[in-house]
Structure formats: C-alpha cells, structure tokens
Image 1 (tube, rainbow, N blue to C red):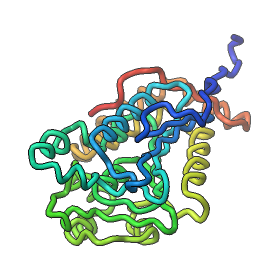
Image 2: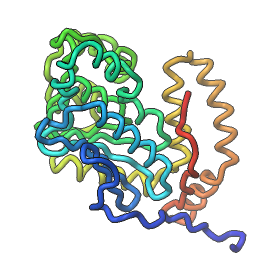
Image 3: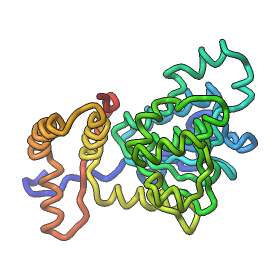
Length: 286
C-alpha cells in the first residue's frame, strides 16, 4: 500500500438480512453494518422467559464479535417492545424465581458491556423487565404511541437488575424515585421530556433507529465507541478526579491510534472517514 493511501476499511459483506441467526424467541438479522435484534413472542407481548433472556445475551455478545456489525438495534415484534417477565414464569413459585430470575443469567445489562452502540427502537408497551432492557441500551428511540412503566411496585417487587443505580443516572434521582414508587405509565412525549428517550419518531421507529445507526457508522469511530462505553460505565463508581486521571491515559492512547489521523485526513480531503473495524475480543468490562 502506498504511504499516503487511504486503507480499505469497508465493512465485510453481511449475511442476508432476512435470515434469522438465533432462536425463535430472539431473531437477529444483519444488513450494511447494522444488526437488528428482535424480541419475538408477539402473542405474549414479547414477555421474557429465562431461555429468551439467555438467547438475548448470547446474541448481543456474538454480534459484538462480528466484523460486519458496527451498531446494534433492539426492538420488539408485533405491537409491544417487551411487556416484562412472563407472568406464567412468575407463578411457578419461589424456587423457580430464585433460580432463574434472581440470577445474572436474566440480567438485562449485557448491552452496557459491549463495545458497540446498542439502540432501542421502542415500538410499543414497555414494562418491568422490558423497561430494564430498554434502559440498558445506549440510545432510545420511542414510537409516538408507545408507553413505558417500571411496574415493579404494583407487583410487590423492588427495583430489579440494578435499576436503582441506573435509572437515577438517566433521569435524575427525584424522577427516578417517582417512576419507581408510583409505577405509573408514561407516554412517549414524557419519556423524551425527562431524558428517558432520545426522540419520539414520526415514522416507523425501527426505520428511524436504523437510519440513525447508519449515521453513526458513516461518521464515528468504532474504537472511540468501545472506549467511551467503558468510560461511562466506570464513571458511576468513581469521582471526578479519578475520571480525569483515567481520561488522560485514554487520551494519550487515542492520540496514537489510527483513527485520529484518519479523521483529520478525511476532513482535510472533504470525504467520509474510513475507520477501522474492531478486532474480535472480549467485551468491555469495568
């Protein structure tokens, strides 16, 4: 390759978008760098079972390793995003709940630990565990008619799966307290107003979320995303001075990485940047 040539970092050819890659309860398709993961129990409003939760986590971690995937979009089949845990599962008794639900295997936080952006396309009702799945994504688009509720207090439950830590970071302590205590249902406009969602979509929410994903791919560095996600996750357990110290070291690493030089060259040449794909590796952890 000539010294000043721009490297060919285009995405490898993806498998056909219409071919499911996981289970009947979780469908996965990939097209032009964007993976779409679909909760697929429309007859049950996509209510979560233990096998479904495991399949979701497995799908996300697999997509994080794929060179032909840069952004992941999560949505629901039919008219709901996710109605929460399947009530039939909740009726199976304390032993079943202890083993399968009070377990890391059910935790919805896998998206937070990936290197790649995960966008929720909230197409309809979202409640309880489904609310937790939505909140664990990085960016949330919500359809105009969609609703959201924590629902836990109305079922005699607690703030599950780390929501007492995560929800205040998203909407502030006062609003988080009110949403958890009341378990009231909020509409799409309120979700955006309080910072729970990025935008209400006027067209099909999945289409708009995928279009946004393509904007990210066209303009942003995958290496930057990987580091940023780790920074944001670690920040919850550190003070400002620790965050600053960590940032200095990460800044020095980024200065020496190829993407800064490529971004500057692209701006000078008035062309889209050609950023490197992420190599297969372990997900970002704190």
